[in-house]
Image (tube, rainbow, N blue to C red; front, side, top):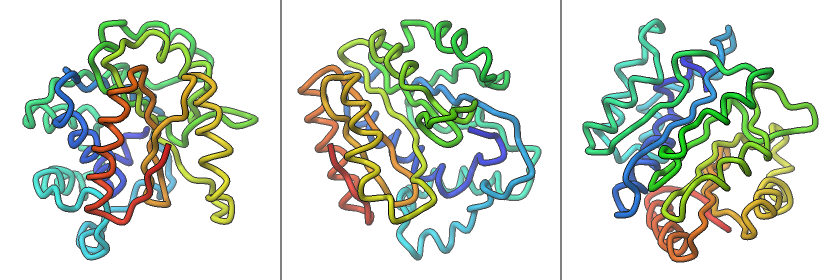
Length: 237
């Protein structure tokens, strides 16, 4: 995650989905945000900010007018963009929110310490959201990636009432989309959890979900199906 991306169209999908889930599961007591914050750069990936067009295209999250109004305020002033600001929105919605490690940049060489220091309390009765710049590890992973070993570490520490949610880009080659979910990320995460993750996708990005509780997974699947019905999304797992 980079501060320069804060408030873009993908954030609309991301934060609307998170609030949608938490508000529908009584056992989830808080939102634990692990942003893996990296330095801003001069690339234009964070400039997907045409909210009017997003509404016309029925992009996910566009029915949440409160969230849209909140994110639009970060459209023009680059200096204002700070992911820690999202805490105010969630707490306005009545969702207790903890943002871990957002005051310093995530460093590849210090990643083991970063994950080790996440308090176990933050992994209990929580929706835990891991937000790497790109997604899960590749052959030559960098600070923009989340390692499977790190997912395993957090998964083993979280309790039965927690949900682990992971952000992931699709590969740039669109022809690889079909095999990417069932044969790639989902399969490897399934080896960690002993069960395939749930996922939801708008065909540009997707979110993967791991739980330890079969009943909680069934409830989450129903919630994702209801969310899907409002937008042109794919779910599975």
